[in-house]
Amino acid sequence: MLLGTQQVSAAGHLVIGGCDTVELAQQYGTPLYVMDEACIRENCRAYRRAFESRHPQTEICYAGKAFLTMALCRIVDQEGLGLDVASAGEFYTALQAGFPPGRVYLHGNFKSPMEMGMALDHGVGRIVVDSVEELELIDSLAQAKGTTANILLRVTPAVDPHTHKFIQTGKIDSKFGLGIDTGQALAGVRHALNCQSIKLCGLHCHVGSQLLDLEAFDLAAEMMPQFIKTVDQETGVTIEELNVGGGLGIRYLEEHQPPSVENLAETVLTKLKRGLSASGLPMPKIMLEPGRSIVGEAGTTLYTIGPIKDIPHVRKYVSVDGGLSDNPRPALYDARYSALIANRATEPPNEVVTVAGKHCETDNLIMDIALASPRPGDTLAVQSTGAYNYAMSSNYNRFTRPAVVLVNEGESEVIVRRETLEDLVAHDVLPERLRC
Ligand SMILES: Cc1ncc(COP(=O)(O)O)c(C=O)c1O
Image (tube, rainbow, N blue to C red; front, top):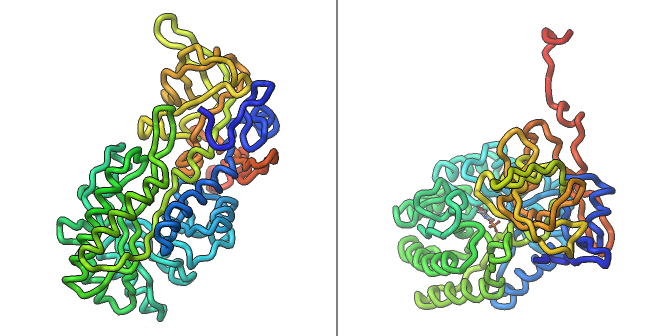
């Protein structure tokens, strides 16, 4: 499986964005995150094309939680997308990159007063409000600042997608949003309308992540017009903006075949239009906030293969120089990945092995994967690591986080430098009494 601009050179090396991955590994060291710029840009464009051609009043926002750096903010801005941020840190990254705050959406089920104040001070586009407590806090903060907070109210349409339980977020039993079925969503709308310094611009819902079929989107697109109708009837307010949450799943494995963005747009927009027009209601501005499907397949992690432990008749462990700290998803979600030997990319994957990380854990990165006779010193390329890898990385075992390079048309540029050992102790404080 070759993704984005991936190719194999005449020398049998994996090439991404016109750059030889074996040379990248030599030049920048491993582990190394490689991001394919053309692939990211094409994914942004595909979402805009699919939605704007069917409903011009659309805003595609990139969900920064998937992977956010200042360079990525610039690319997303250049591609004309908005940006969904989930913390002061993500918002600060966007501001430092010069991303227009008016196109930023602030999320989170527990925004601190500092985060809300930051959003109001910088004129963030929308605050996506998760609870009544938050409405009250934002209202009083906005009043004190003499401003109005533009919000979307996050509601949970009780859709249960077939995905890992940690990334199902639209179910009733979820910490996010106000339940439609429980009546809390309508109560939240009424509450927002009574707030002096809050403008309720619209609604937000999100059903889940890594969705490989359209069922959950379809259900949400059926339920939201019903709720919009209820809001209209009960409060007289017409909802002008509707954010339908994250995007499609991606190909981690060959058998993962997500629907096309065109199919997604057709399904969601048709359902929404039909449901709303049946109630005589206008189609609102539609927003979508894909993360994984913008950057996931654009990312590849390069590792160097080290010791190989063959336990006869049991398993062959192939160790790499990273693991849990640069990719916690196998441990968190039982996530599966595809990989290939980057320096022998044309050789048939003839040996089933387990790729193990180098942490003091059983951090198996990939169980039972067929690779082309892995040897110490080979470069292993793990695919589809662009989303929720660097973003979820840690310093576990005091590993330094890898560098991130952006590749495009044969050029490579560092967009996040590799952490150093000095970085690891930079925030440590040694009390005077312990020095000697
Ligand atoms: C509210 C919200 N929006 C957007 C996303 C991005 O989803 P994805 O990366 O699957 O497109 C998520 C991820 O869970 C989310 O919780």
